[in-house]
Amino acid sequence: MSLVELTDLRYAWPRQRPCLEIGHFALAAGETVFLHGPSGSGKSTLLALIAGVNVAGTGQVRVLGEDLARLSPSGRDRFRVDHIGIVFQQFNLLPYLSVLENVLLPCRFSALRRQRAQAEGGRPEAAARRLLAGLDLAPELWERPASRLSVGQQQRVALARALIGRPALILADEPTSALDAARQRAFLELLTEECKRAGAGLLFVSHDLRLAERFGRVEDLTRLNRAQAEAACAA
Image 1 (cartoon, helix red, strand yellow):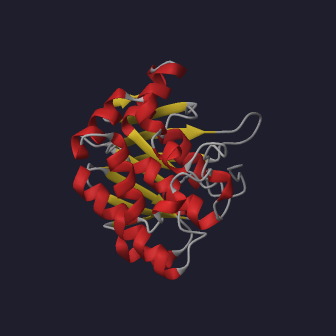
Image 2 (tube, rainbow, N blue to C red):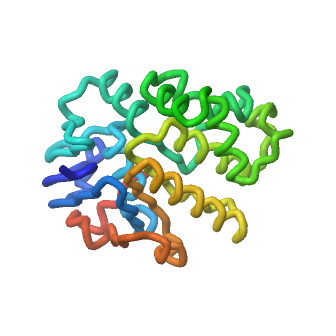
Image 3 (cartoon, rainbow, N blue to C red):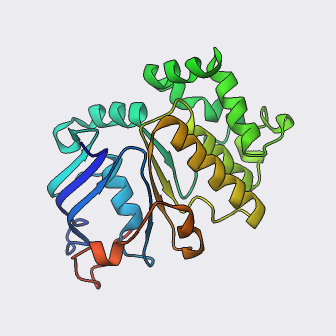
């Protein structure tokens, strides 16, 4: 069974032509896939469908064998927090919470993620600190509100939040755009190592083809997507 499987997927924004039409796409547990394509090709829209944030008009999106369209909105929310770690393009950190509190959010909302984090070191906080240290975020920053971090620091906090509790699937949307070369390398090393440790699948979206060599498979969304090029996706 594939970790992610898309079959005859078709998606259109309201009152627009379809911007995504994908006959078949699959990602196996433990596989790392680099997905690229120009702006407007539907990369972020595709991630939102796989995460269950949006629901396809036709076709199937299965994650861990679950047909996401058959779940209620609250059911998709629960499934997402239990099984999917997401690094958003805009990070989506809560600005008034500290770095540690942001990283621990999945453990607050998911008993499954909390149990996995506890299995690593006795308390979720220990797992959070290990991830933050691996991402070169100094301990003096851990109690600082997220709003007082640089963009690059926020990006690393978002990765630690996605990885905590070893979700089965990591979705990363342009996650290295604000990092310098050295931190970008450390970021990717930690990301791929954590996915390997957890046996998690990774779908990494970027337009930076220089990063592609670090992944087990490379996919071009413009080749996967059968929708007309002029029907650009909004996200």
